[in-house]
Image (cartoon, rainbow over all chains, first blue to last red; front, side, top):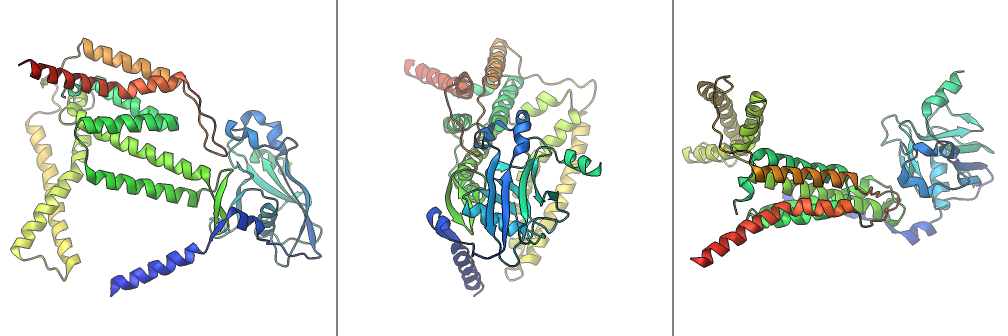
Amino acid sequence: MKRTIILVFILIFSLSSCTGFESVEEYNKRNTTKKSNITATVSIDCKDVLKNIKTLDKAVKKIIPKNAYFLKNYKASVEKGDTAYSLILKVAKNNNIQIDCLSPQESSYNTAYVKGIGNLYEKDCGKNSGWIFYVNGVSSQVGCSDYYVKDKDVIEFTYICDINKIYQKEEK
Amino acid sequence: MRDLEKFHPAALGVYFVCVLGILMFLNNPVIIVISLFSGAFLVLLLKKFELKSLVFLTSLLLLICISNPLVSHKGATPLFYFNSSPITLQSVVYGLFFALMLIAVIIWCKILNFVLGGDSFIYLFSKPLPKTALILKLSLRFIPLFKQQYHKTKNSVKVLGLYNGNKKIKSEIRVINAVIAFMVENSIETARAMNARSYNNKYRSRYRFKKFGVYDFCFLVLTLILATLTVVFKQKFYFYPNFSEVSFSLGYLTFFVLAFMPIFIVLKGELKWKFLISKI
């Protein structure tokens, strides 16, 4: 009796997890964005890497774009309740850019964390390197999953080679 | 057959440290495959192959192969998407080679345990680090001894009629209780026994059963030369975001010779044995 119950649970669990499978073509065809009047400009760049190319990991040298922009001034339509996190996920999917994040549930700070975009990961260019984001040219005080996007916002995701330098600049 | 064990334990220890270190820290697929093949071949030659371990190793391989791409989404070529996160070719292959490396390390440690087992460890370290050597040896023996004693105690409890099949947890606790008491007593006994034999005494002479000869010296020098050549002429390999190319380099050749050296020694001994038999 016990065994059958456990077996049924395992079956239900495996079936429910099987529904998540998608081929690459299906994934690319699936449209996630609905058109709306509210728009925001999104860009993803790694200008700082080109300045500090010496500390860059040799393995990722080939995938760095020459003009330092993975995505430049992309106009994205924003739905109600969209955060910077959900927006960047959608934008990356529509532009076929690889993205790897910790969702707010997975991360220990209750806010999303971007590990890597376009196969450029944290710690690839020095110890303190990683992705940060700016809203209208100012670095946000909250995490990207807690910032709700407004109309005509300019959202920039930037790769930073040394986060301590940024903090020092802000203090001054 | 016994030729490999005839070498001085210090030379053999250096050899195994070199092979395992290169295998673990270079993380190169060619080196992993070479050491896997040579290790498997050596295990077959030494007749230490067990079918039971094969089941464990394949299940380990499958577990890592499946779990790595679920956790790591690095890599440029997605195979398919699972819950809208990509399962990439690179992370699958990385998981595969990581598992193969683990398997190779397990196989080489098995050979190490066979070749350098018994008294060799105590022989090597009883003078410089007597206490550490004894504690290490005892702790390595702890788990097999525990297992053995557990089966013994369980059988005797069953015979006495105190093992209740319906109350399994209670009966198991009874058995484990007895085994733990035995282990504590046993460790004290061992310590007293070693003390009585004046272990760790300054004036205690040691039974020297091996001398560092010319063959050992040649073996040691050859090992060190090959290992340093392998490290100097290593080829860095990247899994992420794209596989880097593998081309021929001297490091692979030297590691090949290094990894197949004990096989040559064992085969030579075997051939000599056969040759001597046919003469009679």
